[in-house]
Length: 210
Image 1 (spheres, helix red, strand yellow):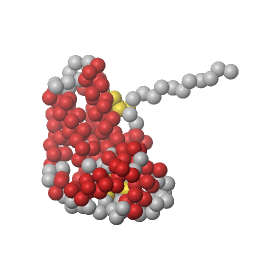
Image 2 (tube, rainbow, N blue to C red):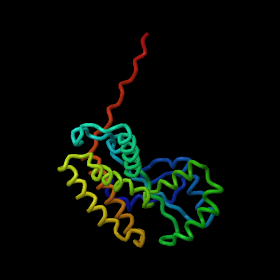
Image 3 (cartoon, rainbow, N blue to C red):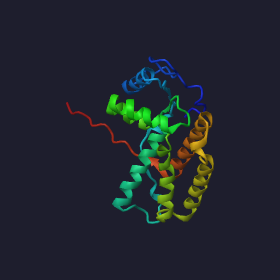
C-alpha cells in the first residue's frame, strides 16, 4: 500500500489522483458537498493486490486447532471489517473537529438527499474511529477468549499497545495528525492480518464441457 496518502487529495469531479474515474457514490458525495456548503475531498489509497484478498484465520496459531462455528463466524466478520478499513478511502470535509456541525450537515443534507449506496460509502470513511475499532476488537477477542497459543497472544498485545499509543487523543487531533494516525494504524492492521491469517483459497474456475 502507498505510504504517502497526503498527496492523493483531488478536487476534480472527474478523476482522482490515481487516474481512476470516481465511482457513482464518490461523485454523488462530491457534488452534494459542493452544493451544500461542505466541500468534500476523497483520498484514495492504492492497495497492493494482496490487500484486496479475503483472509481466514491460520489454524496453526489456535490453541484448540480449530474454531467452533460461532467463533468462526464472528472472527470472519471482524476480519472482513479490517480488510475494508485497510483498503478504504478517506473522506475529509470542512468541519475539522466540529462534530456537532458535521452531524447537523449529515442529518440535514446527507441522509435525506444521498442514495443508500453513497451514505454507506460515506460511513466507511477511514477517518471514523468506528472503522478502525475492529482492529482492537480482533485482538481482544482472540487473546481474551484464549483461542490463540501463548506466543502469538504476546505478539498481538504488542501490536495493540502500539495502536493504542497511535490513536491516543485521536478525537482531538488536527486533520494532518489524523491522516498520519490512520496511515500508521493501517500498517499495524496489515501486520496483524499477516500474523493471524492466510488468504482464502480461491475456487478454480468451472470449465465448460463442449
